[in-house]
Length: 361
Image (cartoon, rainbow, N blue to C red; front, side, top):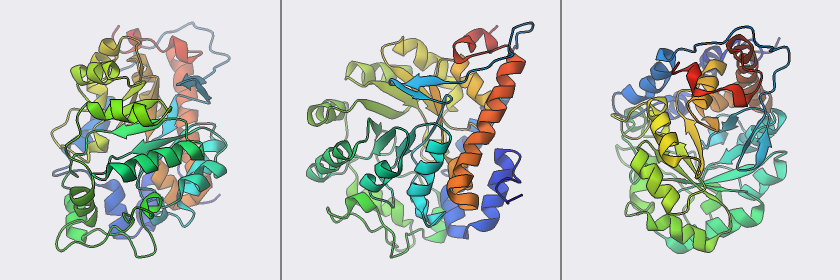
C-alpha cells in the first residue's frame, strides 16, 4: 500500500501532506487570515448541520452524476482554483488536472498557476475553467482572457473578494515568496510573473497590492462579457443582494465563497449563507459553494441547500503533495466513496433526491 492509499479520509491525507511539505509551502496552503476563525468556521458549520435521512427507499443503485453549466461530471464535486501547485509537486497543475480527469470531474485553473494554460488544457480529459484576477493593467488582463479562451477553457471564474490580499500571518512570518524558477506562468509576457520577497511582508500580498485592481465595480462583469464569449461565474459572494447584482450584470453563476477563510476572517461560513443566495438567485444562474467540504456527507448538505456542486481546494493540494496525479485522484475518490455511502444512508439514489428537507425537515 502506497502512502497516499493509506489515507482513509481527507484529514489523514492532510496529515501526510503536512509531513512532506516544506514549512513555507505548508503554511501557504494551510493558513487562513488573521486568527483563522473563518478557516475553522467553514468546517465547523458543516459539522453542525444534521441530515434527516429517509428510510425504505430503494438505493440499490446510486448515481452521483450531475451537470455544471451543461458539463456532465461524475459527482457534484469540482476542483477549486488554488495557486502555485508546483510548490507541492514538480508536475504541478499538470498532475492536478490529470487527477481531476481520472475522477471524472472539472478542473478550475488559477491565475496564479505555475503552468501555462495551454499545457493544462492539453493534459485535461475533462472541462477546464479559468479563475481570473483582474490586474490594474487592463490590456494585460484582456490578453490573458483572450489567451485562455483560445486555449480551450470553457468558463471564466472571476474572483471578487480580494481587492487586497487578506493578512495571512503565517506567510508574513515566513516572508512568503516563490522560488526563482517558479512564477505566475501565464503572466510572463506582461512582466508579472515573479512573486518575490518583499521586506518583512508576504511577497504575495505585495504582488496583489502592486498589480491587482482594487477599484473593481460591477461594471467589470459587463467588460468581461464584451471581450469574451465565455460564461462568467462570480466567485467570492456571501450576500444574497450581491448575488442578485451579479446575475443582473450577466453572470452565468455564483460561487458562494469566502476564499477558504483567507480574506476577511470575520466572514460567515459559506454553508450558513448558501440557502439565502440560492433563494435569491431563484434559478437565474447556477450556484456553487466552496469552503470546508471535507466529507461526502458535506456534499449532500450543500446540494440539499441548493448548490449545483461544491468546489474543493486544499484537499487537492494535499493529494498533490503526497501522490501527485494519483494523490489528487485519491482525494476525489475518497469524497466519492463517502458520498456514495451517504447517499445510500440518506435514501438518495441520485442528486435530484438531495432536497432541502434533508437539512430543513
